[in-house]
Structures are given as structure tokens and as C-alpha cells.
Image 1 (cartoon, rainbow, N blue to C red):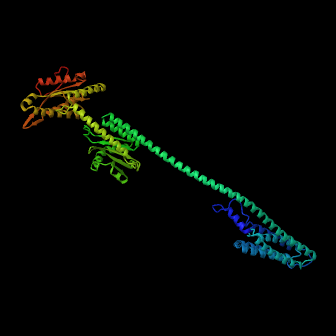
Image 2: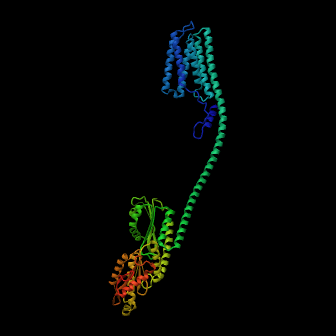
Length: 588
């Protein structure tokens, strides 16, 4: 029962991880202490040696053992004890107890056989008492049945030693020896009983503490369970918070993109300037999506313009320079594909020379399409490999709005062009030409620059109509108008049909000296041009009057009149001439 109870207490002290808690177990508390044993041994050996050397004796009887023999026996056991400990002999409780009972028995025999060596007998009795206590308690777990059996063994040894020792002692020594043995046995048993009693009290105390610890552990387990629930709830709350933050971030981005698209759409709806629309769109994409590069390229001859458009936003100066060179070839390569948006990453980026050493890891190209015709591309690039992992919806929506803007601008410009152009020649009509001329005059005054104006008229045009018919005359007018329009556009100017066969050409920022070679080349080309109408071949010539502000005409509003006067001066002096105005209208 005691053993079972003890093991039960042991189990109660085991924590969940298998370790013993802070309450120390009393079981197996009597252990072999080599230092203590060697001190006791050494004390007995030294005393035996001293007795031998001093030849101390208190009895007339001759002992069976003298001090030297006792010294030798103790020394031998001392050495054996040390050696057995060194070779781990005492690891086995049975071997340890066996050697200890042999020691007790031998030392009891020594005590019985040395009646006249009182000092050695006393020290040996102390050693025997200590060994007896150790023998009674060692590795017993304080199980009373085991201790009882060992008590019997000790009693047998003590009785045998006492009986043997009485034979070698006087009556007085015999009584002392008997009392010494009795006291020694009583002391050993008393100490053992005290230790057992203390152990039982400690076990009871530990048992009560264990119950309290168990209650505390139960409470702790409940607290831990409650804490785990709280932590689980907190984790869910944190996860939901993170999800909400992510959702809010995505919503904020969506709102930002929507707001940006709304602004771009509003701007596109307010203007027909496609170049400005492209600039606003690329700037909006850079601010909203934050790529490393955004570019839009449109081919020439779109939305009634002669030149194409290429706008790029980036901080990579070297990339911008290379892309301007490569954009046409990139467009042509893309044009040969299926005209679908395409994302390029990893090894696919090798096809783009403009990247160079720049840290660009993703490129997207989107088509600009009107109807079924591809008229340009949008190119977006980033240093993030997964920049387009959510797709191209935002960019495609932006492109769609841009396509609508281009279409509307094109329709508007076509209607405006019809209102501004002469129906026969396709150049500016007189009304629109005068608007352009007034704007050019204001700009010239503001910039304080030059403005040259030339008026030219087809020589003997009435004869052409009378000889070849009005259709032939129309062909001549269109030919002269086309040549004049080409020279005006090539030199940054504009041309208009001023009358039936009269045309005006304006060259901003050109003095009369700069304008004269241009008009001479135009005049020479017109003179060398023949108009074929049906089977007729018609030669054409014109008379041109040139004036300029401010070197010749100080009032820009009088430029057309002065050019007209210079032209009529040429007609009056032989036709087919280029006359440069001067103050007296006499210089050719």
C-alpha cells in the first residue's frame, strides 16, 4: 500500500511534459556520498594508525586484533570502496547493499575483537551506525516492508557481534560493550524512524500541495483553453482586419483609378486636340498605376494630321532615347500580330532593344484600333515581374476611351475641314484663311518676328476656260493650288484660295529674303508643270507678288493689299513674274 501510494504521488508530480515539478520527491533521498564516506573511512584509518603508533590500550586482556591489523583492514576496505565507486560498481543497488552489509559485518567483528582499543571501537561504532542507517534506507522508497527485512539483518549482525565480543571482555567491558551495541542499534533505528516519519509528513504535505497544484493546474488549463479561444478570436479579428485593410486598399485604388479615368474622359470630351489627350492619358497612367514607362504612338495621317504622334513618360532617359528610335519597328512587329493586347516577361523581353540595361521586367502592348484599323499602340513597362498579374483591364478601358475620343475628334475635324476647305482645291477657303491670317498677324506682333505674304494669280486663265473648257480650267486651278499648298506646309505656312484663280500663301517667321527662294522654287515648278485634260496638254504660269512685315510693310494688316499691288504690277509688266514689294512698288 505504501509503495502504491508513493508511486501515485510520483505520478501526481509529473507535469504534462514529463518533468518533475518544484516539489522534490523524498523517495530515494538516501544516496551514496563518496566524499562523506571517505572522510569517515579516513578518520577511522588515521585513528587506528595513531593508536598503533602510540600503543594506547585500556585493558589487561590481549585483543584478538591489534591496532595495526585494524589499520590494515580499514585501509583495505577504504581502497576497495574507492575502487568500486570508480568502476561504477555502486550503480547497481543490489551490489551496493551487498558490499555495505559485508562492511557492517566485518566492522562488527573488528569491534568484537578489540576490547582494549576503545578509541578505535568508538569511531568504528560511529561508522557502523552510519552504514546501518544507509543500509536500512538506501533505495527503499521508504517502503516499510523492505526496511523491516533490513532491520532483521542488522539485528542478526549486531547480536552475533555482541555475543562474540562478550567472550573477550571483562565484566565491566562486557557491560560497556553491550550498552554500546544497544545504543548504536537504538540510534540507527531511531534515526531511521525519524526519517520515515519526516517523509510521511512531507508526503502528506506534498499530497495536499499536489491536490492544490492539481486544482491550480485545472484552473490553468481552463485559463489556457480560454486564452487559446481568445487568441483564436484575435487571430480571426486580425485576419478580418487585414482583409478589410486589403479590401480598403483595393477600393481606394479602384476609386483612384475611377477618378483618374473620369478626369481623363472629361478632358477628352472637352477638346479635340489629340496630342493633348495623349499627354493627359499617359500622365494619368503614370500617377495612378505608377509604372516605370508609359508611351503612346500613333501613325501619320490619322485624324486628319500629316504627322504621327509619339508621347513617352519615364525617368529612364536612355530608355526614352532608344525607344524613340525603335517605336516604329515595335509598331510594325505588333501590327503583323493578331492586334490583341500582349504582356511580355522574362525571356520574351529580349525582343525589345530599348530596355538595354534598365531594370524593366514586364512590358505590355495594347492596340489602338478604329473599326478594324490599327492606328497606334500603347506601351507600358515596369520593373516588377508581376506588375500586370491582375490583367490589363484598366489600360484597355483607358485605350477604349481614347479610341472614342479619336473617333469623335476625327469626325469633328472632318466636318471642320469641310467647312474650312475650298470645295474644288481642298485648300483653305477665303473665310478660314482670313481667320488663320489674323491669328498669324497677332502671333507675329506678340513675338516681334517676320511675316511674309505672297498673292499669285494664274496667267490668262480666261483663255484656258474659253479654249479647253471649264473642267480643264478646274484641273489647272487644282494643280496650282496643290503645288502651293505643298510649299506652304513644307515651310511652316498655310495657303488659301483668295478668289477664282487667285491664291494667297503666308509664311510666318520668314522675312522677304527668306521667303523669296521658296516662292522662286514654287514658281519654277508651276512653270514646268503641264496639266493634262483628256487629250489636251495645258501649260501653266502664274504671276506672284511678295511683301513682308516689318521690313517692307510696317502695318501687317496691309500685307494682303501690298501683295496684291505687287502682283498686279507684275501682270502689267509682262505676266509670269515674281515681284517683290517695295515702298514705291517698282522693285521686281
